[in-house]
Image (cartoon, rainbow, N blue to C red; front, side, top):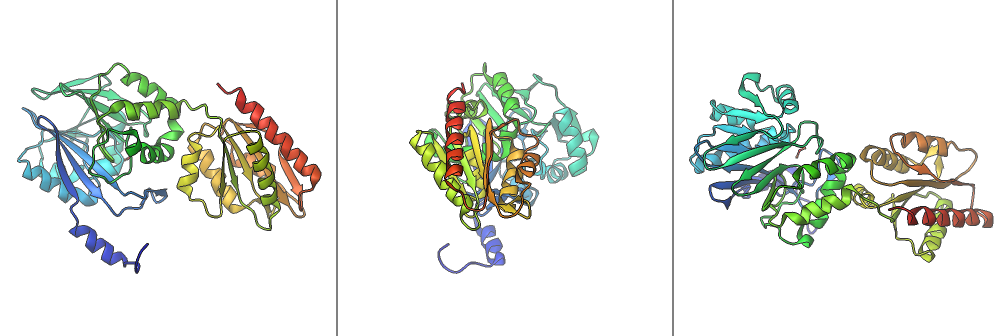
Length: 408
Ligand code: FEO
């Protein structure tokens, strides 16, 4: 950061002065209402979002006026102001997902447009009732494949569960061939540009996928299959920029969700240097074997960096000293995250050191209890590694290479 750190109050006041809502016409009588959160740097109190985010709603003006998704509750006034400036009454609110960053302004919308009906999946209905206290009588559940005619426009509802909650759906608009995808294909990226090049979206889309979508890779494959026969001209997610070349993001998702990477991630932490010596040795051997590796020191790597690397890693080496018989707390936190996010790694190996006693292997496996990985023979060393230990590390490196070579 350049210059003095501004106070929280300064940031809040300053943010309010910034332009936050941007209305963009994306097709005939179709508008993107993008609510910019330029300064936000974390999401869900954990996800690093270095480029801020947006909450996007979409308005289709027709015989029936339809709003797709709303916004963060704190930004409801901006959304209402924009709808007023477009001089519409809202007939339907399509709530594609109940999480509050998209549904949170629905109560305010219902106060302004009391005759509006909410359309959503059955799973979403229950969540909206519970999370926001929206009365059941305001909600109409839709079924997969259901179609709504708004006049000139036709909305095709496609239920796409687990991208990333059980309630999620997307909406395909004809005749414009726009796919409104909510969190699916989204990115936390506060930019006004529209995306037509891979380089403009790849990193932030990967960050988003890694944190939000990776645990559901199998469901993603199924949902991509449901979209395969649609002719999609534009993807309009509810976070980040609109994507004018849909194949860019569709191909990225295809690759990430069916990952068969041969990369090895080495996540390590060391206290007095013994574990670090082991990491240095196995890193050198893997490089000599021409294995694609990424080494992350958990003492200074960011959580986001680690999680993004996991998207396309086929094997993981966990390197930790023993602390009070268990993995170092930084390694334990990392293992907890990996276990939760279920990256596509197929092989795991534990290396590390201890002083007088260790339960590190047992405790590491416990922290990985939902991961479907093959654990390779660990290399755990009492004190400083010796020549025999380095030979065991060489053997492990060769085994990893052989295992990865046969991954299809
Ligand atoms: Fe962007 Fe799952 O909310």
